Length: 170
Image 1 (cartoon, helix red, strand yellow):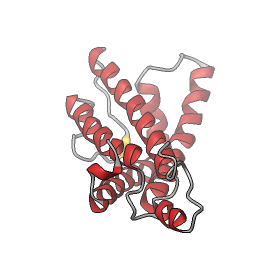
Image 2 (cartoon, helix red, strand yellow; image 1 turned 135 degrees about the vertical axis):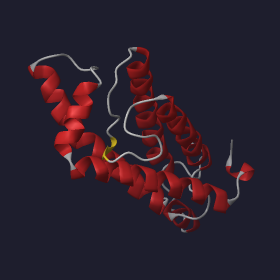
Image 3 (tube, helix red, strand yellow; image 1 turned 90 degrees about the vertical axis):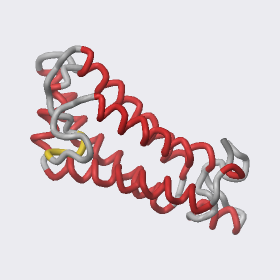
Image 4 (cartoon, helix red, strand yellow; image 1 turned 120 degrees about the vertical axis):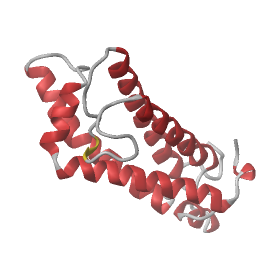
């Protein structure tokens, strides 16, 4: 997949959809951190006890800010490939956690958007996995194609100061 395979508008559309998705997810989690912390613990992926509680508290405040940062960078088309890579890794991890919950038969709330759930209802189902799969596909577009000419990365390239591998194709 390279820039030539996608129009600048198509790449920008994928970037903006992912920016909106991750901005809603991050701000939703920050709007009710207690709910998100409980959601993290309900996934039962962390050790039980004080260490797990501390990790859940860390995740409660670090993950939403990572999502918001990725959203802003994707929206601006700044450091696009790095933001898309982090987005892709976060989504991949979240998707693995969702599959784990389904396979283990846990009946829990996703907490993906805080105490609001978009697209799939309140409980974790295969719908959440499919939704994340679609978003992983959308994230792959700017990951491989860059900002697509409609972002700050392209502006830097035009000025000869491109960042994040736009000139080298990294």
